[in-house]
Image 1 (spheres, rainbow, N blue to C red):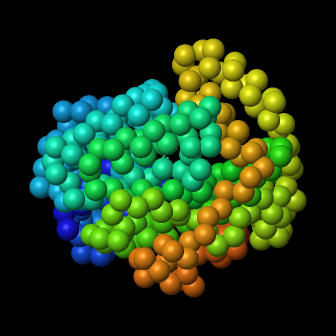
Image 2: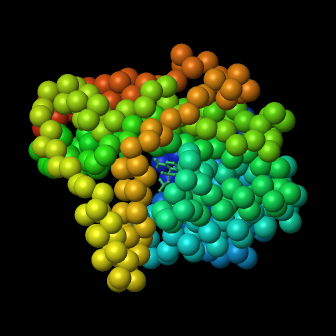
Length: 317
Ligand SMILES: NC(=O)c1ccc[n+]([C@@H]2O[C@H](COP(=O)([O-])OP(=O)(O)OC[C@H]3O[C@@H](n4cnc5c(N)ncnc54)[C@H](OP(=O)(O)O)[C@@H]3O)[C@@H](O)[C@H]2O)c1
């Protein structure tokens, strides 16, 4: 099928583009910076230059497409606000998809988005889910809990570099999923009748608390973590200060996410229905133990062999 991927330079989006190409789909990627997206052309995707915040670029990108997969979200370092990308931009993309008579529109939300109306990202996700459902565009909504790739910067690298590892109190267990598996599941849903007008969770097999993730990283790296626990009250205060200055709004929005991490209620979902619907073998999915084992083995070998100093560059591509 003709598939447009938006956000294809991102952690999840690049895997979606790659898996869709491997599955034989004709993939076009809407990208803001074609130089940065050159690897997507090398993989076999066509590039169209545009942005969610430039609505006139969306209709040309959707021309001739049957499926649109939205993997975009605002970058923490972006000069754009969360609202400009994750609300205004997404409304514009859904409207353009409707006008282009797209047969399937995939959106990546977040599990339990409706439970956190005070967390801007969750609030926008929840309202975009509703907007999409009411738009008459045939949709498939995926609700990930969290991606394993995020754990490298959050825990693995600070532990390797003897830096402080920050956790929240109370802790929340999260069922992390590898973006490769999330992408494989999404690509299986392309053109699947049973996935239309469905909201599907994307979760790993087990929910992990921060202490469990840290203990696993300590075991695999043979190092002891320096742990600092941030009470939720302090994070709320930091968010209020950040929000006071307009230029730190994205930081404030990110700090608000700590409300989710400190909710104490596990971010976990039963996946059996998704596996059956999309014919997925759960045995083939990556476990967190397997993912982190591969990461640490690779980086520790590299450090031994070459005295390489930058573990930040060692996340899986
Ligand atoms: N990370 C998680 O643990 C997690 C958990 C639950 C749900 N999700 C959701 O899963 C999706 C993918 O997340 P991710 O972590 O893979 O994101 P990511 O790595 O931060 O990538 C974001 C992507 O969005 C693109 N983008 C940003 N602003 C844009 C704009 N104005 N127009 C077009 N594209 C734009 C970026 O392009 P540039 O390269 O040009 O900046 C990049 O390709 C998101 O919807 C996210 O909310 C993520």
